[in-house]
Image (cartoon, rainbow, N blue to C red; front, side):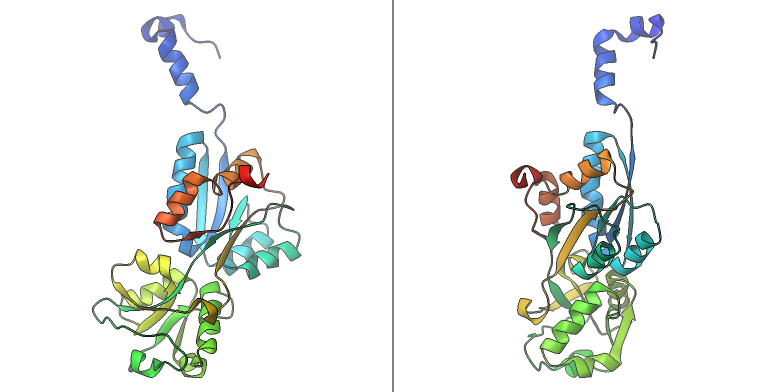
Length: 265
C-alpha cells in the first residue's frame, strides 16, 4: 500500500513503523465451541491471545452434547472443548476431528451447592441423607441423558448409594449453568455442579465436595475440527496449552492437565 507523503511528514518514519508492527498482517476469525462451564475462563484466555495476535475469536458456549451435535451437522467450529470425553469420542467416531489434535486440557471437581441464604454443610459419604438436604425441594443438575455434569452427578450419587432417592426429585437442566441458575433463584433446594461454576456464583453455597473416586475423572478434552482448522486455529490450540493460558485456567479453579506444546514435541 502506498503511503501519502503528507502522512509520512506528519507522523515520521518511526511512528509508521510502530503502527505497522502493532497491527496484524491479516486478522483471522477463529470459531470456538466450548462447554458452558468454561465461559469465564476461556473468554479471559482468548482475550489474551487476541491481544497478542490481533485475530478475532468467536466463542459459543453450551452443553457439550448440544455443541457436538451442531459440529456433527456442519457448524463452522474450528476448535471444540468438551466437558467430558464421551462427546469428544462421539465426534472422533464420526471423523469430525483433526487426527492427533486431541488433548486432555483441564480437570474439575464436582460439588453439591445450596442457595446462599440457606447454607448447609453436607458430608458426602456413602448413604448420606439426601432427603434431609432437599427437604421438600428438588435437586438440579444437568440431564444425565446427555449433559456431562449430569452424567458425573448420576455416577457420584450411584456410587454413594443415593441415586434411587435422587432420581424422582431431579431437575434435569440443559447445561451446568442452567442447573446453577435453578439453585441461585431458589427454585431447587440443592444442585450438583462443577466447583468452578460454584466459585463464580455468589448466590450459592458449596455444601460439600464429592469424593473423586465416586465418579469418573472430570476431563475437558480439546481438539481441532476436521475441515475447519487453520493456521490461526492451530495457534490458538497451542496457546491454550501454554503457560499464559494455564495461569488463567488455574485462577478460575481448573486443574491443568496438558503439557505446553514445546514440551510435548
